Image (cartoon, rainbow, N blue to C red; front, top):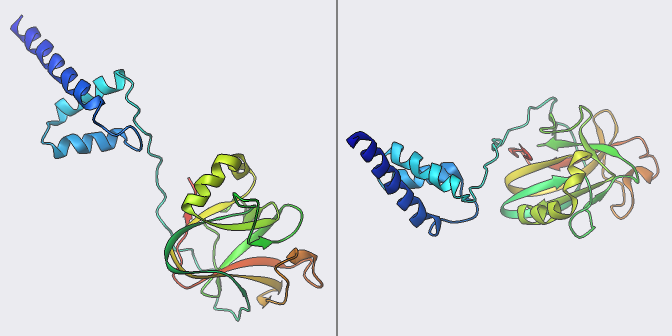
Length: 227
């Protein structure tokens, strides 16, 4: 009987803690893992923390779900250093996390017009061909004809309007990017040109209808898949 009483007392004790914490804990971007770490920092035992967590869940506390995070990868080099001519698209003098998306941006603009149909593009890092991390196709990154380079907040805004587009086009993350992103066209194997007009579709210009478009990045650029 005394054992049952102690169990009931413990249950009441952890319920009271849960009630108190319900109104004090952050209601956004706070996962179950964050909660257990919080309780550990407060000196709570693991058993009490789990009891309180159970009560909070039964009270429908809005714990966030943390998606598994992909570690940045240094893309695998697949060729030798090449002589590459490219046009500069954007330069970032301070480290900025960016997202490259194979479509228009949140303002219906873009940085590159490849063609007026679905196509692919690839990347060069340090003037070397590399494997396309997170590409939807072995032919490279898929695009509906456009490429946009966004900051992470801009991408979050874009997702609210166009998230379904990710089913048919590619997107990848450039964590803490610093440097210049360029664009080039491969007209023959390992032969590149920058003689094109960025205000028009690249593949519609003279002699470029069968070229492959590449984004260029500086040496050491890392890429992560978009979750």
